[in-house]
Image (cartoon, rainbow, N blue to C red; front, side):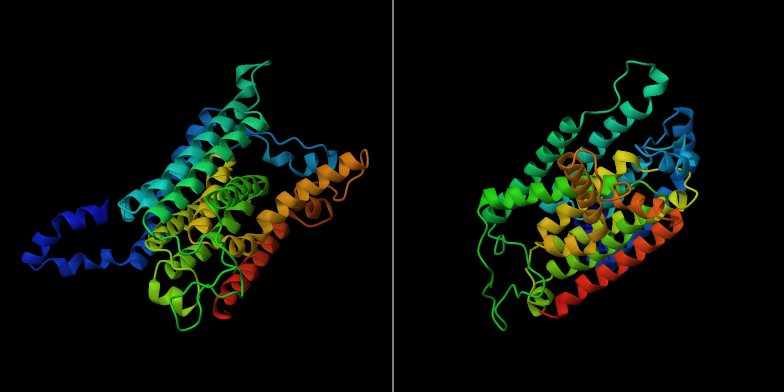
Length: 388
């Protein structure tokens, strides 16, 4: 919005010698940092009234697990309001609309995905968490297949239109994900160097797997005070850096990474995501006053993967968000092994953060140690850029 307004009155500002005072808004890096601050302030300032509203609506969490010991450990979380993801998704939406260049296709598509996944999660949260108030026989949230169907649908549209836009505008020089330590350009030339080009169906299928999978991975991680929000902060800041590189032709080709025109605007969206999670952590740190619920976790995971798909850094996101993907892998392994062995388990409880919790780690130890691992993984992933 600010960029559009600036473009509208640019001539008048230049004629009156005022342009120098606002030219800083032409810089994507400044607007990305501003998005962090604006998004953070929005969540912090609106957090308390939103939490009060959720309490009045009795939108509370009452976690139940197939493990008596874990239920005892998690008992203190009963009736803590959830659906706080409206703060995260709302702050990302407002900050991006305010500070990003809305003429950029990738921004508009990202906003559609954000709203769609947040709405999906909001419906699921509302159905589940007001069940007790509605009485017995009320539906307890969306069925798993319904939620997955919508996630795959949103992911399909995102992947399809990213590919179509790139082809139609001759920006799709790289359709295969960039691999760590593998060059995307031949040194000293503008000639792409890649394994092969993915066709439309291959690119779209990969996007669907990444976006839907990441959306569910963050959702499964959202089980301890500050766990998902803290990891998301690190991932979002890493993506903000990667977007700045991918959207700059000189820097991207210097570092032998895929150059994606206009993708640097996604740094503003990534910054808004980082700021929103920082602000949410203000209320979500132990002891949590609110949980993000599906409203926040589905949108966060999907948006992170969408940004990675656009800049062709899906593999780096798998490294940076390694904890997220370990969480979903632990559930798949646990369920699969349980069915294969008629009741045996690999972990004490899945997702894997509960395994460590039952093993003697305090909740705060699990959370902080998972943050530290994510920080190391992010540093490792970013280091691979220079090693190309």
